[in-house]
Image (cartoon, rainbow, N blue to C red):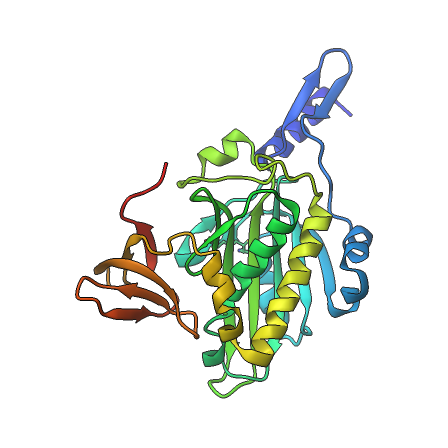
Length: 300
Ligand code: BTN
């Protein structure tokens, strides 16, 4: 291979987020140890639940949610998973972008089918956040928290984001594609591109590899989805509130029409709606989607 080709390849790898070191007289090497995704390692970690999942590991995808949503419309079964080593056009909530880096992130989506209609899936997005929090807490000595509806935070910095996209009839059946982006080891350049405080698992001292982490998330997602199917979000509410990052704090909600409402964060209701206690002592419920939440006094 010519020097120019090597140079181009190294540049290409760096543009995807890999850190490459040049070693004088010898060549190039990865700056950080990287565990690539491997189906047999994921399946081994899934243990006796492995048959519940159809696993598709892609080298690259624009968005695993887009790929899986399309597959769902064409009949992909419950428990289908799409995971990409490199996601180059990741979608975030509220029309935002989601940045991943090659080898330093987990970007995957899982499809769940429900007999119930989309209206019954209100709490699913919170349940998904809870599943990721449980999964991370299995491998970490720090307890991560949840920002409504489902951001996973450590010290008010974002560790994981979740995008749930649903389709179906009011009466059912319906399906949900749950997309999860988890920061495993973000290089400084990737952090600079993100316009909010971020944290990664490496910083938290988590040593579990990406295959194990993926499997733990899938197992916890499966568990919360089973609970949702049998009992609804009501059965997960107390556990979600235990992880609530803003419980009892003054917060401001920005509504879809850009109006703001302030009050004290008073937890969530049985459908997953955010509860806010206003200055008149009334508790108001705010449902899904376009609400953004920021604490009035942010923590360092
Ligand atoms: C957020 O804005 O917090 C949600 C981010 C969700 C990102 C994940 S990465 C895997 C899946 N595919 C996407 O395009 N988005 C989700």
